[in-house]
Image 1: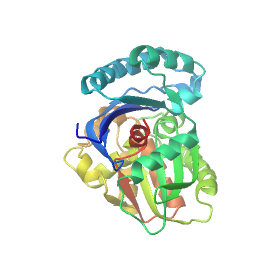
Image 2: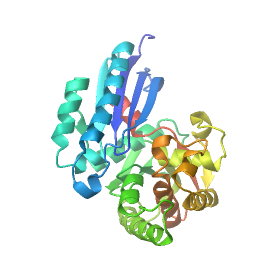
Image 3: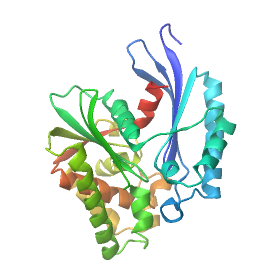
Image 4: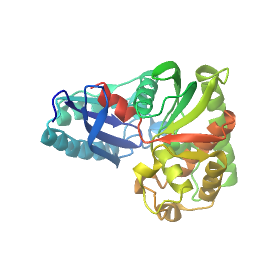
Length: 309
């Protein structure tokens, strides 16, 4: 490492995925990636129905975390911070998750609040975005929750986390493959209600002049809209996707079954069953804020966690 840099590791464990970032922080507070990884473990599988983390989901998460731990040690990170979000907030047996993480990683996970999740997402995303003369509304569409954050430059002005996400909407409403029209209508009604409640807190006066979306749902939809031959984070990061493109991707997904979605070049196998629910969330948010386009960022809560390690 160069003089003045510090090597850190951040782990973000959500409802659908667990992600690792090992990076060097330079003297100006910028991250320089060493390792960036993502595994779909579906920790929150069934939590909306049962209120508990399933044994199989905990084991999938443990296996991924053991691999991450080995990489953290190999690369000599000086500090490690792990946060856990929606699924572990909601689960009655969250202590089983906490004990497992401590035994594998040697560090206790921080089960953060929705507000902290939102603020970390904003911090991580705006660190790489160009300066804007005005306010941004950032949406972080996860598996179990979506964070709405309004801010100016790097300052968070309002933030709220609500229980709507690609896994939660799929498990709650979209149970047929492909989903029926009535299932879609029920999901959209649910998303609209929650989105309107979130916007009444995050951006009641519609002060934000730019909409930014982060996390796997948004980046996958962007990859589809750009018709990429394979998932390309560099091509997706900083891209701008129009409402018409998002609406078309959503409509195309509506008529596909799991195998057809799995064949989409940019699709991670672990997202194929929940991407339509996520697309409905993004499309509905854009409708409610009357956004003509959305700026897509590959940087999010994981970057915020690493910066704060």
